Image (cartoon, rainbow, N blue to C red; front, side, top):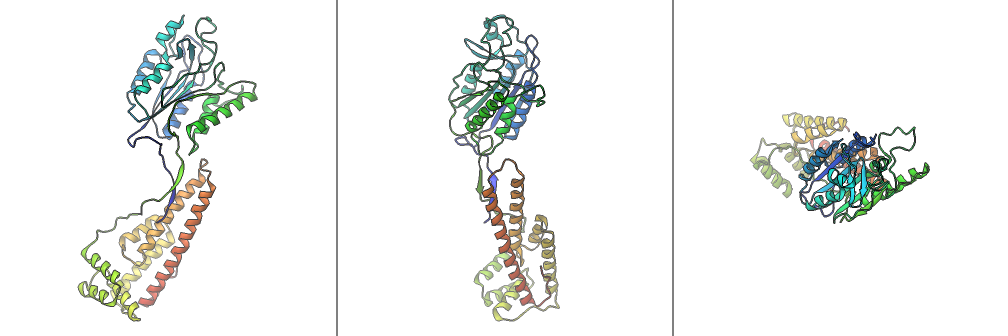
Length: 425
């Protein structure tokens, strides 16, 4: 049969029932520490990209401590064994001796012990996800900015950035900058991009089909570092990986065979079974047996045409109703050819499921579907495999050429057997 190039979303080692769930948090409006400008925008942008990649997404912005706890707990409640999980956090974070902490908007602290009580621990988050036994978990932490408590006291946390973390099995943690580095919100005063440098680069790389998450992140690391270096800044996203198998936002594009086109044709009747047997036998006696059994049947004209072919002369009376019926069928086929769209070919097939051109109608529908899909791939900026496109286009052309020859043969047969004037297509 025919084949198409389709985007197949498959994830190695993931149960068939697994789903994709994501949580995207952006905290800008801090009450007692420095406000941020783009964390909310980044969370919104990542939320949209997660949705496009097939995730069910919870988007939360400007969460105080109570609402941060509620949002994370509600999200954790959605995770089932085998699911794929993604969490994006943009906002303030701080590194303490006991680990990294994500800060809610109402954080007020005079000591590290207060932060431990009123901020969300990143290690605690990874442990809770681990308990859910997700098949894969990606945590993206864009909190590598200056310590918001730095100007107040040197007793709370490190000056800048977050330290390395050891994620649980099946997890991957990404920081927007390495330890001791500051994550850039913009590249210059004239940079009007609504997203931070890390987020905009991550989004641009994650859209590529067939790219494993490790390869996506390598590209992000290199592009962020290159952009930062151009303005004399040091920033390279950090990756901590304990995941298993292969994870894709958009899986590889593969060639597959689609199921045959099925149309709403009438159910097979006893007469149709008899006719099929006559065609299979293929001799004069079999077609005569059909005519004797069904003298007014649906396939009378075809039976007489086959007999005529076998004996070498026409048995159709062109002045009868049969001639008009065949002309009507040819007119509908002519319309289908002129319009050359799926609907008119379907109309022909439904009315004449065993007509002179029923097989050609099905072939035409398959070709149109292939042409439409290839046209979409050609417009896609993400699809780069020109060899596959060329192979698909070649196959479509060969299918058209074959169909044209078969159609010509069918038309000549009708003209020869029925001795009527038939339009030339």
